[in-house]
Amino acid sequence: GDPSSSHPQSAHSQPATRNSQLSNYLAVLKIPSYVLDTAGMAAMTFAIGGFSFWMPAYLVDHAHVGAKEGATPKELLAQVNTYFGGIMVVCGISATLIGGWLGDWLKKRVSGSYFIVSAVGIFLSAAFIVLMINTPFPFAWFWLFWAVFFLFINTGPSNTILANVTTPAMRANAFAVNILVIHALGDAISPPILGHLVGRFSWDAALYLVAGIMVFAALLWLWGAVYLQRDEARAAAG
Image 1: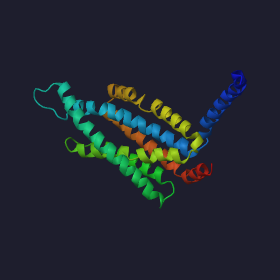
Image 2: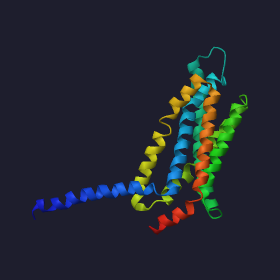
Image 3: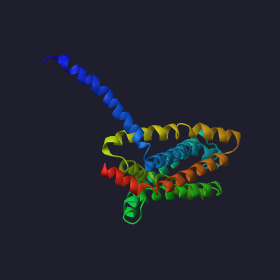
């Protein structure tokens, strides 16, 4: 009944727990599908972070969208923010649902389906950004809509990969590492980098960088498709 008798056990259990947590963090780095998926998601988050942050300013300052006599820059920016925000919401919800369904449907037919859907989606998004850059508004709104739509297609499939290639014991650690990496290398740094490019070079240079980063994400995800089936089987086997 002496409560002090439990102290040695708790003292030993704490280092053991820490070691177990550390081993889980290190274990995910040995899963190619996880590493490549996280790298692709970081590139995607870089693109979407900078794109969503700067697009309203691009539309007003460069494309002169919504320009009207007597309107202040603040009023124009508010109007464009409403348009662009609506596109982000509609595309974000619909593309996430469609991307998840498409990954599941394709899995019955193609190995690495979740990676392939993610890769094709973000590659198409990059293509539509290039088309938007080279098309005058209001026609470019069409390309902008599809650029945003396909940018969100990977949301469901890329997160499904994280869950499918990790065992239940390491899954929480895997998602924690993923969240840290994609934000640290993604939307935390993209707005200032793109802002520097705009100031030093041009809006087009910044947006071409976004498109290039998207293509890089597509290549990482296509690479990951090679390992997905094997890594899913290993995770399922424990």
